[in-house]
Amino acid sequence: MGETGQGLFAAGFNGSIRVEGRPERLTAEAGALLLRETMERLGIIRWLTDRLEDPRKPELVTHPLDELLRTNLLLLAQGWRDHDDADFLRDDPVLRLAVLNRRGIGPLAMRPRVPGEQLVHNPEVPDGLASQPTHSRLTRALSSEKNRALLRENLMVSAGQRVRGMNGGKKLAHLTLDADSLPVEVHGSQPGSEYNGHYHARIYHPIVANAAQTGDALDLHLREGNVHSAEGSVDFILPLLDRAEKELCEIASVRIDAGFPDEALLSGIEARNRNYVARIRNNPVLDRMAEPHLRRPVGRRPKEPRVFFHEMTYRAENWSRERRVVLVVLEREDDLFLHHFWLITNWTEKGMPPEALLDLYRGRGTAEGHYGELMSVLDLAFLDQPLR
View 1 (cartoon, rainbow, N blue to C red):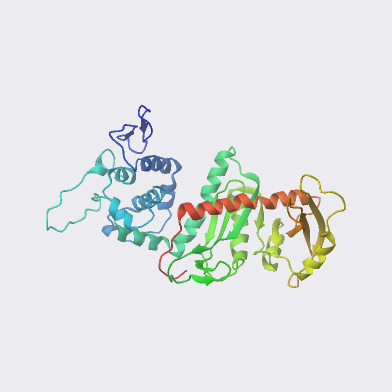
View 2: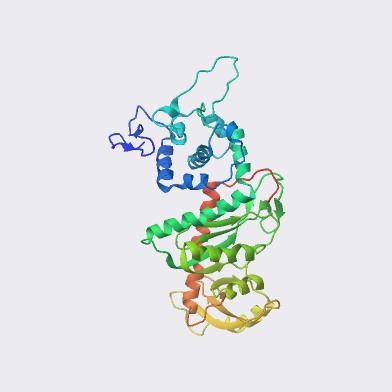
């Protein structure tokens, strides 16, 4: 690791390990040691193993749950995303040092294999890392309803710990929750995946949420590929508001795109006395409301493009009442005609002037960057099994 001459790194989880940059002793997986040290200091594996349900019979366990979790996380972090990679790397000495619980050079100990003799596993002294079938069984175990609920909870708990750690032990005063749907393309006929005409691909269509100020992923719910963007959003977003205010902040607000605003979700947020901002799709009624404001002002254009705001109220057919909408009209440098779109919010004009409302909504650009990182870094893959 690093350049020749750099000082040693001593791992707290195993005092026998020293890491230094020496060209004659290089390994492609040395970063796993640093990641193991990070896991130990965060306590994430201890937190999970104390709470996750392990369905295996203890007397038949060769690889403890904490070692399996470390192996999966380290392989993903090191760029090994396929369970088959576990077989290829199960004897890698650095990964064994980073994964196994034994101290000193114990993780490197190997029992001799006698040709033709069947190996009898000792639960306390595995020969190497777990094989691909063991990791596949772990994934199936983690997908149980109880464990999925715990893993979702852990996203919020971990984010809360980080936020309070960066904020002097206190929760944030305000937090914006971004919620969106993501198209996860699949190459096959996995149960639950469907062709989606909007994305022109066979996909899963999960709904995901993160914290705008920190970028932390807070929750994700897997859905079939042909569902609408807002399908299940009420049961996803409203409880998330409550959990965010328990772990992360004093007051949470919601920022969503044009696929989400419907009566059930908007009224649910309003009933909690919380605020939201969303874009709403144009329709003939909104087009007629916007038409008088889409004429370019008389006179020469200024050098900088302008933005115009128009405050109105609007009630869709299935809404229970009128709501505040803001028409945003934009000049574009090379466009002959003005561009426009609508924002909807339950903030008052005094509490959130239109300029501030637009700035807040435009923050979705950062959130979409976080979603892109989730898609590209994790390279999401799903088991060939029905959604539950």
